[in-house]
Amino acid sequence: MTYTAVITGGNQGIGADLAQALLDRGYDVVCISRRAPDVSHPKLHAYQADLLDADAVTATARDIAERHDVTHLVHNAGLIWPNLLEDAEPSDITGLAQLHLGSALTLMKAFLPKMKELGFGRVMFNGSRAALGAPTRTAYGATKAGMIGMARTWALELAPHGITVNVVAPGPILTDNFWGIIEKDSPQQEALAQRIPVGRIGEVGDVTRAFLFFCDPENSFVTGQTLYVCGGASVGSLQI
Image (tube, rainbow, N blue to C red):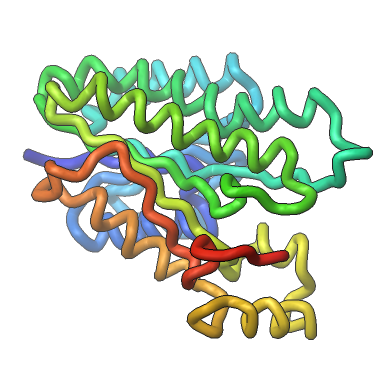
């Protein structure tokens, strides 16, 4: 079987690193992002879409399903939109629910017929340790927690079809999203690293390796699980 992986937000950070790792393994990779990837590859196919726009997601999902036999879906794209409770709005929740949950549902519904036909599929969410709770994360934590519930539900429904569904939940990872909250190489960043049990902040490669485990066609007996890639931060409390 040849494998085609759709990665949302595959143009930068964790998504780009995973895309390259899968390309190196011979996969076709379909990237959905607002901005085209900075790299090119014969097996890399780029689609530009804003996943906050439900209509744009529907059109893109239909186009990809017509052009590609998708075997893997990695819903990696995400935004944080941090604010304290006093400043949070219901629109924050509806917006991030569309991005983190609604767009995944639309994409999966488009790719599911082919996965069922093949009797094979690997579906993954990029969740977050913030699903366990974190200050300023009302909408983000709620929708990332929603990923876990949705993944467990899909895992039960799709297991008879050879489709596994799992969540990788990173803790603090050195990406643009992280540096959008904590200044790069600042004393705050260093202090956070010291509070993480393993003594450092994660790198994109740490998360990529977790996704590669769930991507593996040989891993057919692990589904409905959430793997925290957080240096031990999910074991106890950690204030970011």
